[in-house]
Length: 316
Image (cartoon, rainbow, N blue to C red; front, side):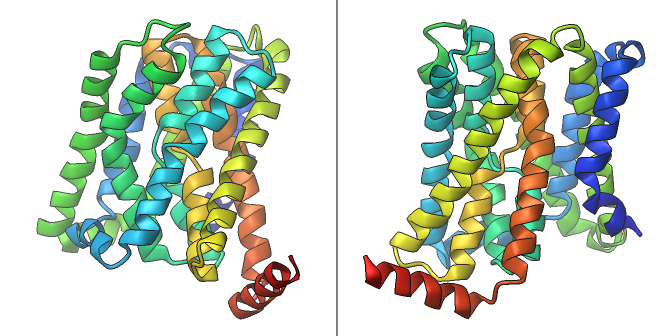
């Protein structure tokens, strides 16, 4: 039952977005709850992790290294290029760059599982990119968007420590010492995270209700392009480097699916509601695109995919 509810995440996000658009008042007053909601999401993620997830880097260091490099190079640069291509102003550009500079999203773990990827590798990459992003995200935003926007690097760094690092570490520690308890509540954690993300999306939509009709479609196009570039780069760079199909699918989801809730919360805290639109739309779109791709790959045997790709490479 819980699985069916969480699998319908795009539908719930769309319904609450429409509700917030037509009736923004109840959600506008919840603006101050965005950061606490994100902290809950990060805590829920931590409660599903154990120290071994971070130590697995020793066994998969090449794949993890590739994923992290692509995560913090392709995604922020693609965000900037798409913004320039579509002629975005400073507000929308910083929102896109911020979206491209955050860590991978936890939904990538679910998509990876459905697509027959390497789930352990996916969890490890998400955990490491989340911790690394505490330092890297503010620096990337400053480097790529700092010329047009005043980026409070130190304040953003401190916020990431409080919003991301502290709850994740607390969750991991709790999972180690109170595992019997965390194991019982783990089945409901995806539902808690989904509810928190949906509420964040609804709040941001409500705050932008007056200008959503003007900026929504063009930002949606940017989000679709950005997501597609990330997934394609993750998959094909891994394939060109000779990784097996399971690894390629895993890296594709890790690179292409961002922690849009974090990007939205940071945009609201340090910039403007308009700069949070990219993260809001990405939350809906990457779950939809990820679900469709996972469904396609789930029906495509790993060996067949490797054989077809190998034949295509030989032909060229």
